[in-house]
Length: 229
Image 1 (tube, rainbow, N blue to C red):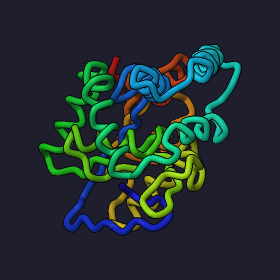
Image 2: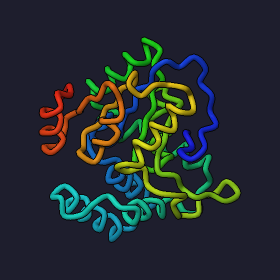
Image 3: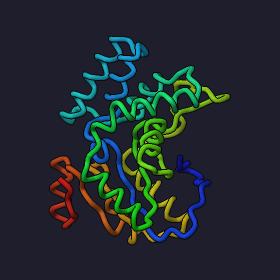
Image 4: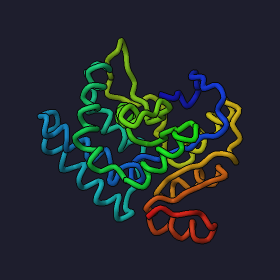
C-alpha cells in the first residue's frame, strides 16, 4: 500500500500513471455498505449497527450528509481486535464474494489497458485500506492508497490512522506519487465518478469521468472530459 505521507515503494522506469477511484468507479456501489452487509452475514456486526449504516448511506445518496472521517471511523471499529493477517484473508473473501460481481467492466477494461501499455496503476480511495489492498491484489495492482487503520503489534485498534482519503486528499496522494517517482501529472490519467474527485481529475492530463454523478457529469461536459457510462 502507498503511504500517502512517505511513499517508500520504488517503481523504476515509470513514465505515466493512472489513478483509479474505487467506489462508483471500479466497483458499482459503496464498498463500506457492502462490507457491513458481508460482516453481518459473518456474524460480526450487530443488527443495530447495520441499520445505522443503511440510514447513513440513504442520507448520503440524497446529499444530506458527507463522507466524513467520523463515518469512516465507524467502519474502522469493525476491525478492532483483529490481526492484520486475518483481516487480509477476510477482505480477500469479501472481494471475491461482494466486489468482483460488481466490478465496472468498462472501468476495469481501461485499467487493464493501462497495465498493458506499462502505465503504473494506482487505486486511491476513501475506502478502508484493507478493502483497497484486497481489490488491488485481485486486479494485480500493487500501488494502493486507502484510509489507513491504526494498528499495534499487528492488531487493528479500531481507530483511523490519519485522515480519510477523500476529496483533495486524493489529489495530494497523486501529486506525492508523481513527485516521488518523477512522473509528470500531465502524462497521467485519472478515473472517478463523483464531484468530490474534481481536484484529482483536474490534476492530470487525461481525466475520465466514470458513470458520473450529475454534478460531475456537468463538469465533464463543460471541460470536455471523456465519459465512460
